[in-house]
Amino acid sequence: MAKSLPPELWSYIFGLAADEDTIFYPGLPTSMTQSSWARSMVTDWQLRTPRDSINMVQRRSYLTKKSIISTCRSWRRLGLEFLVRYLFFNDPSKLRSLTALLTSNPSLGWWTRRLHITHFLYDRGPSLDDFEAALTSVLVQTPNLEIFIVDWPLSRAFGSIADTLGTHCKNLRTAHWHVPAELLPKVIWALDALPLIVSLAVEFDAPLKDSDTLTLGSAQDVKLHLPNLQQLILRGYSGEFLEQASGWSLPLLRSFSFDFGSKLEDVPDVLSFLGTHGTSLLFLDLNCIPALDIRTILDLCPLLTAFSFNLDWKITPITQNTDAGDGPVVFTNRPHEHIAHIGLHGLLFAFGVGLASAYATPDPLRALLVQHTNDRNFAALTKASFPRLERVRVLNPTVLIDLERADGPQGNGMERWERWAGMCEGMNIRLEDCTGALLGTLPQEYEEDEEDEDELVEDNEYSYTDDEEPARPGGVGLSELRALLEECRKMSEEREDPPFALPY
Image (cartoon, rainbow, N blue to C red):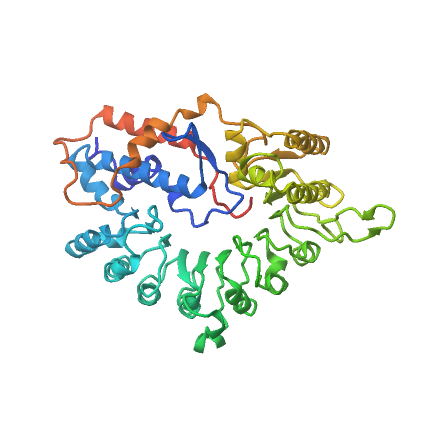
């Protein structure tokens, strides 16, 4: 059977079975990307983030590929290059064994399109800087790399990694880097050498030295032209990056996400950046605690179809009501004709659950003020301001986790949820949580159908080694082919649209 079909057809079938269209999609997850419920061995339910989901897809895909190459010698020979198309690690020490493998068989690296080093240990475990030589060696041997995601923080190693990417990985389309703020010059030079980049996420940690002493050197004068960049995600101390990017040429930028975390001071100049690049944006996500000028922002971004902001922001009314105090909140100076999807950050105090509710007990005034702000802002989500509005999504996963643990809203949170749901229903707007379900829909028993498989892949290795299970002798029978095609059919039925697609 294996000999009767051309290798190209087998490669196509293997790709369907391994769900490679999701793994190789160039877009990165945003705040609007759906989370999902999963059974946990520690608690009844846990919320699986989009990052968790793509990691699970990669684990499952690797198991499928191992099964394919272990079926027979013919499939092993056809599937060997297929196995190394993406490389996924949660332990950077495996980079050393991968380096040895690629050195002994140089042709394998030619097939690699995605390298993802995820970070499960966080503050524990080795630093990725300790594996600088191994990582740069892998990059040198993977010239067709298109996706390079490193969740581990990088510091001194980033310089040589950036140089290697610019020299040997000219096809790079997607990058995710996590670096200290003072390495911005090296980030700029890396981008200057990667003109094909489509999606970029950079997380800037606090500078290791006084931020006032940071200098860009010769990178100060670099005016980047990134003709293919469509998605930009910035987290952390990104103020200097935004200031520089305001003068860059980003003609295809369509999606911009800004996450300032819990910081309250030195908010970057987002307005200047949007003044330069906002006219072409379709997706805008602003997650920060200090309030921004939302009406000006929406004027600067007339083509947005999806917009996310913090519903805890205290928005200044356009008009003052002398009898009743402040006038109603209005989000737009004129109706925004294109926004159909709105995401809401914040809302920890809205439903009377979780730690925010516990903190509100000794200081109820603060909770009441935030809840009042939430109510005023939510009331401003109308068809008068957003004529095409179809969906409002509560994005904060902590809110949904707290609701699940408390079995729904508590106290005046229940009344607020009913009121907001009624407002949305009256305007034919869908009110959702971060899983895409209607807000208030908690996980049910039938949702645990894939958990056995998830537990199976949890402890597996994610890189190819020479000591895999030996191939079974002989050719491929009809039973193996039927099993593989059945796997393809199941994967195709379960597969959704690309989860990180640019248009929402």
